[in-house]
Image 1: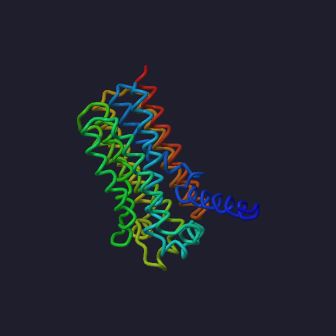
Image 2: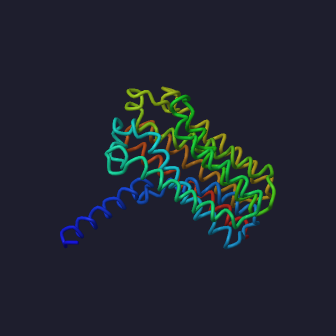
Image 3: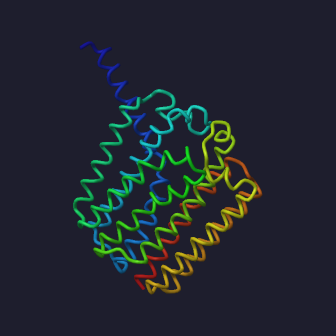
Amino acid sequence: MSMGTGMGSNALVIRKLTAVSDLVRLPKQYGTLLVLWPTLWSLFIASDGSPTVRNLFIFIAGTFLMRSAGCAINDVADRNFDPYVERTRSRPLANGRLNVKEALLVFAALVSLSFIAVLFLNRLTIALSFIGLLLAVVYPFVKRVSHWPQAFLGMAFGWGAVMSWSAATGTIGWVPLLIFVANVCYSIAYDTIYALMDREDDLKIGVKSTAIYFGDSVYAALNAAYLLMTVLLAATGYLSGLGPVYFGGLASGLMIFLWIVSVLKRTPTRAMAFKGFIGNVVAGGVILAAIVIDMRL
């Protein structure tokens, strides 16, 4: 093999690895954190503030792997839409850097690694993992038939809360179910904000979303989703015996959420919508910190 051929082969490998990185959003881990927060809210409460190192590692790694797998299958599902949306036209399937077979191989590899990690947990959690996989696979197709893909995303993202609880306790109770429903509200809010960036493009190509469905009432709907989320998490805290640090953190999170909506209402631009979306990552982390601190006092 000539030097030129070898250099060309290396360049191809680098291009493919870069495309895979873009496929799974490797440089953009805010999505992973949004999946991780409800999972860890549930895990820390179920473990009385002291989850095992094994469970922490499995759920952090599993969240990263499954969120990455979700991105891959989402891009496969949206490959014919993404070229017509400003935010997504540079994705690797949209611009031809990867083909469908390659993306599916990445998806299969990530799901397999995630399932291997789950095998170290109890039987109930292993069984629940199949529901989580189904939710992750079905979600990208919901936007074709319903204006509520954001709610389905919340189910997919929130299922980790049910799994982490079952991993720590061997059961499913009211608390993880409350966290699960609270996360549906959370996801409706932050993913509606995210969808505002694409609303004009989505209207042209026929993709449905809550950002379109809510129309001029979108800001009122966002506030309602955040308030309902807070009520559900307050009920979670009450049932779990959490104290003032938790409820103070929850109130702080709500203040951040309502501030995001007010700023976005005043400045309804794509850039501000993205900043508002990132603000949700911060608020979710504040709630987790409040849980951890409260349970260790």
